[in-house]
Amino acid sequence: MKDDILIVGGGPAGMMAGLLFACAGLSVTVVEKHVDFLRDFRGDTVHPSTMELFHQLGMLDELLLLPHSRIDQFALHIAGQKMRVADMRYLPVAAPYIAMMPQWDLLDFIARKAGEFGGFKLRMETEAVAAITHPSGRVCGVKTRSGEELKAGLVIAADGRRSILRDEAKLPLEQLGAPMDVFWFRIDKPADYGGDIFGTARAGQFMILIDRGSYFQCAYVFRKGEAKAVRERGLPQFRDDLRILMPDLADAFDQIGDWDQVKMLEVALDRLTCWHRPGLLAIGDAAHAMSPIGGVGINVAVQDAVVAANILAGPMVAGENPDPLLEQVQSARWRSVTRMQRVQKIAQDQVIEPLLNRSKPIKRPFLPLRILNRFGILRRIPGRVIGLGFDRPSIDSPNAFD
Image 1 (tube, rainbow, N blue to C red):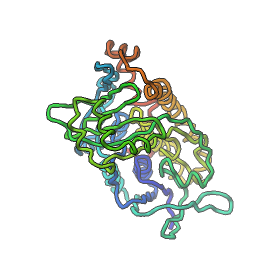
Image 2: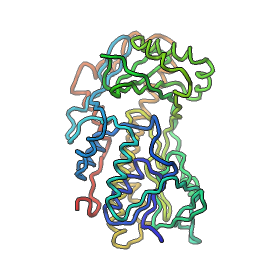
Image 3: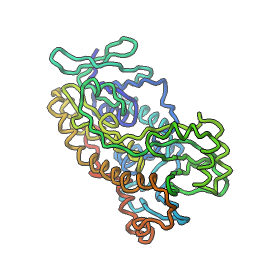
Image 4: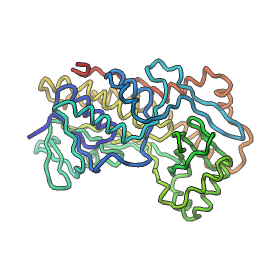
């Protein structure tokens, strides 16, 4: 048995691709190495651009029945002042806000909707460990850890920033660099204290807090390579550093009683300069790792899946070879991905890195922040970039609305 499409990786890119290709009438198998989607501190931000795609599919109302909170503005606390920096309330979409939704709920929802199509299969606990290559050099399937061979007319690598398939295919990777890494953790939210997404900064330290209703999801940002040093200073010192950043939450940081509560995110910013070879296409983090700045990674990955389905589904339904079309997928996504990475790179190099390397106290908010805070209409610009990205696609793959 051979599927039309085999997707390696059950993250947002892989699951959305599976839904759209199955919706078009193709036989699709998604393989995911874990037993379920339950992973803490994965990207939980469903941006307006992604919700608009579900709106096009007629699924948005059902999606929003899942537990979530809504965020439509961003602020930064710096030099003792609150600077409002982004506003998404005026975006021309059905849901002009970010839905903070556990990623496992989103993935379960997509899997359930995709399962309504007879050609869709999801195989959990199925880890792809190697590509199967035809003597002609074309990728034609994968080998699993159990020794099984799965064949398909097209293999899509959606297996993340440490993609085994892209490494085996020797796809060229360009490193853009990132000056920081992140510790993720959560604290229960004190009564009557909260906000949307807000950050706080002082010389050498930076933290983002996301209001998740009953708790804060916290990202403590530090210079790349210093995770070991932070840990070696001990938990009491780590809690003291957090109290200096957020004195209003000083007592809440006592909840961090073990380093097991603190998860490490090694930040990467990179991209393949070629996303494909015959029989294989990389999308999502496998094609381009995004910085956590703006929380756009899920949404850029989902847009890859949409464009791949738009370009490939119709010809594959008609029995055509997809290989000549793979370059079109990369070309259609290249400007959007590289522009967003350019914005993230500028933010890293001109804001975050100088802040982390700074030793003098910050006495006054930076000029761009003061301008955004003063002129509300200007806050719509970063709100649009974060909420919609660049060149956002619509779904036009065949049978998508049947």
